[in-house]
Amino acid sequence: MLNAIDKKLLNTVADLHDVPQGAYSIRKDGAGLSINSTDNIIVSQKKDRQGINVIVKPGTRNQSVHIPVIISLSGVKEVVYNTIDIGEDSDVLVVAGCGIHNSGSKESRHDGVHEIIVRKNAKIRYVEKHYGEGEGTGKRVLNPKTIVHVYEGGTADFEMIQIEGVDDTYRLTEAKLYKNATLTMTEKLMTHRDQEAKSDVIVELLGKNSSVKVISRSVAKGSSAQIFQPRVIAKAEGKGHVECDSIIMDNGKIRSVPEIWAEHPLAELTHEAAIGRIAGEQLIKLMSLGLTEEEAVKIVIEGFLR
Image 1 (spheres, rainbow, N blue to C red):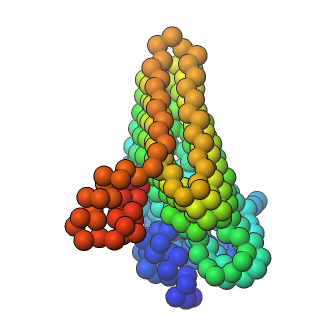
Image 2: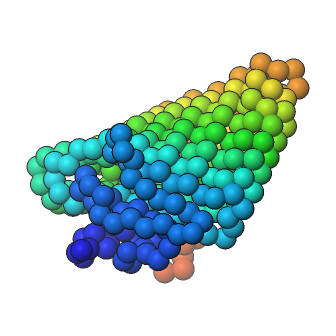
Image 3: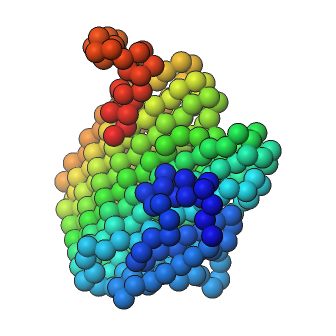
């Protein structure tokens, strides 16, 4: 059912070595491959469009669901809409992500929409990894859209990672936070060669004491280009912070445009941004321990994106 390439992609984007236990949905080459539910997490195919529903029952704790997508055929293009509903007082891990292996000349593309609903006092840790590989000339394109609603007392911890090998990506995240809701979003992105990446984040603080922290870490190598535009809009008393740090190398280009927007007199919003190269002192110190310059650069980047 899964060949060596499939297993490598699964391991890279979802830390899976094979079909997992518990609740999961694995999508391969534009179709559902395997799906499974548990007593507390129901996973089912949508009837009106491509995609799945993930329903986490209220009170579910210390459980997880994996919903990776893998593409290993050149020329596959798909649009998928997934709905993830985290029931009240739950605490779960959701592992998503997409890996593309393209050895052909045609573009392979996955446009995925995740609508995530975090109910009252629920908690979600959401991890999404994107990865591309293959010796073909066809592009590997990933365009994720994430729509998040965090209701009263809910907590969402998001980690959005682009590892390498993705030629073009447009990432859009839209979040609405209600009373006492909290969102922490960390985006880690690396581009090389002539790859392009754009990320828009729009967070609205709609309820009293809602809060958000958006953190971006990115590295641009080769002649790649990145644009990161995070926006926090406070329409109620709440707190928001945006932090953008980037390393630029070779002939890379990075544009960072953090924006904070207050529509309530008790809102507290801050932002900071920095773009720079790897400090020479860091490389010299690592090279004095016997590492080559290439090995030292790799260690610095891995630490920065960790």
